[in-house]
Image 1 (cartoon, rainbow over the protein chains, first blue to last red):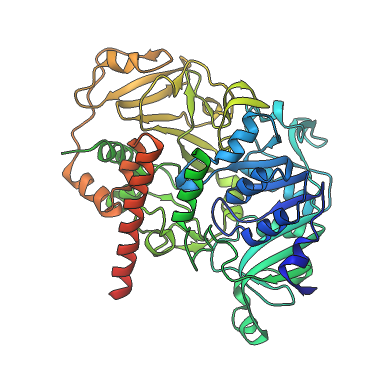
Image 2: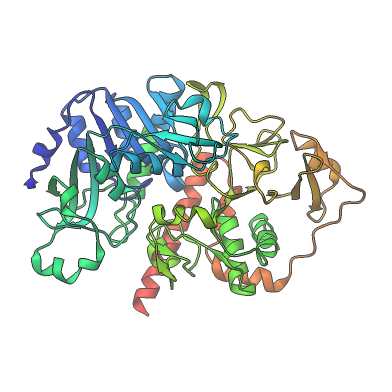
Length: 251
Length: 265
């Protein structure tokens, strides 16, 4: 467990790695780490996002992504994500589309180090046709059909948090989303924190710890590190930056 | 003057008033305003997720200041995976997909072309195949959204135990399992059945004289206004990217001002 400089943390990401990114939509995305990965010129990432936003936009725009697993990518109230959309339409990235719950169950399987898990999923969805990580098996107990999901390989998880202790205890006043699951699923977890806390604050706020130190490998101190996205409830979305981005894409 | 947003929110509120208790997600502002109004006025037992760990909050509809305006007086702290994990008790989704078809299938994935290289890539299927109950809120009633056959089946709402409802600016439809079609239950004031047929891409089941929706009660209107004082619900009817951005900027400024007022108080 080490406190790392941003550049050292970003240097951990290499071509072709499977990288899971935490947060949800425009909230609590580790944007400063994403920018660092792009600056490093990394290519061919296998990206995993539960709900992608500007993280996906920037990585796709930088041609850093080969494949993306997602249940949703968008810019919340600002609408569709234009770079993701263009890349999908031009087949410049391979897509692996999931439903929200099936993706969580697959990540949970990875966290538990099993190769697959069963899940409840609408049998009519065409996700079965397009996502090879969804399948069907005969249940050995009931003889009925069970839906199964393949556990992903996650080399690195990149997360953003309100606060972290240098030993890796992670605190968020907002929603955990799937960050804890991703940290447990990954072989290596890097948490970017708005603030570092000491032993005294950790003792006071232990009820708010969402991710424990045993699944966190590195902490990076980065105030404002989710900008231009939000880190709720500390700060909201930088709307002007999102609007400027959309205008730039359109032009 | 009753706006489109008022009409849709009040219609949903009236429907939601007697729903059984269940975690309920709403994808559109008008739907959320309707659910909140039903909670306020009739004690509806829909339980909402506050997008910040706040479960069953009682605040105002908000886009930019959810933490300060919407996540008020929550009943529990429950993160999203925990909410979705209550599979045994189900989740109800008021979805606004890109397409709904005549078989009650919905699409939030791609439009046209091959799935691997679509004509239009949407955001993704999200929780459509996961929800126990699915109902549709399609503010703009148009045949390009209410289609004969969806381009991709994200889910089939017709295979759920509770038949889906479909709310639009023109009326209310309900899935008829027996006849495997959408039955028109109500048309909004001044809307003709023929108008609904023309703007729907699938056959609509019409039994006799379809009644007009009951007039919007002042009580409901006031409840909707209370839970959505900045009229975020009207955003569902704004078309065009520039107009949407302008409306978003107005909403954001109004939300910031409301939070500042709360801080001053």
